[in-house]
Image (cartoon, rainbow, N blue to C red; front, side, top):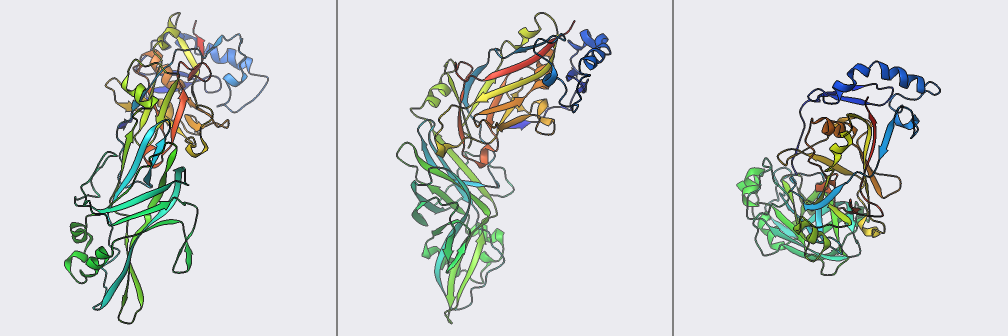
Length: 458
């Protein structure tokens, strides 16, 4: 998903001590009507609000009764159409978190996350003249997990045979060539909260993978040679590591582990003629790319994605460049059939399906982006408001997400932006493995709603 920022804000806020009335500088279809009432409305509303004093941002709907004489109307029955679609690829190079693992989700199907990474020199190594390699260990620092952490997985490590450039941009469907002979294959269970013991010392949680001793010997054999003189020379010789796991074969199993590659490393342990144990560590903080893959075969997600006419009571949202949900209001303009309106508040509310398995915890935050006239996306104008105004965090009820899109809806009604709908996605989609099932616009119990408070202008 490639998000473009909108043009410079073209609206200003009137009557901040009452309801916000938005005037779009490019579109004056509604403002022409109420411009002559601008100085009258503050007086009327000010009189109505005299009994109590509140913060300016709170004055408005919170103190206006539903049958108020100012004529504020409310609707939550707007037709909302939803459809789940495959997400575009996401940029996935040099992320703050690397995802690794596989999940067989009973609703969303099979999903995998793999990593390509440089092993970067931490200074020019000097192994001495007489030395023996003892082991080579890849240590990946945990920063969390998603899924069933009791699932046993097999991690495999391969040597890359294709160049990867830290100055290049890579996306989540990128694959690099690699030598099919593994440097390591090891079963493990994700333990993101369990310290490990290294040389009798307890250290931070990490997945420690022993690599080929043949590779260790070959690295030591380069002592004093040009391949170890700089990272450019080293990366020409050793192009990096490809790390993957085998996906689980049973529905409901699997786990995606989160790793911090800035503190991860590949360590060569060796000893010299005095039998002193020594080590040299390559950092993994260089070029790195996450690669995601999905298989929705046989799922409700696949049916909805494949059929543009599918009508379902559910909609699906998934991170890791999985699926997104398009939300549209095809009949929104009908609110102006009897004259121009001022949108006092517009809230989009998404509700998650009840009974989500505990191992598939709901994302803490969602994001919606508006769709432009050529199919691209941009942030709604409300996104730029401060103080959490825009919303998107999971509410205290643990199931709903609310977005304030008041100004965006006003611009749509005024004709300032096209009514092409929105995409709902997981916030931080490239660095977490969440998924979410929500009620669609057809769901009788917990449908997606547009809650609209508005005032008809004289």
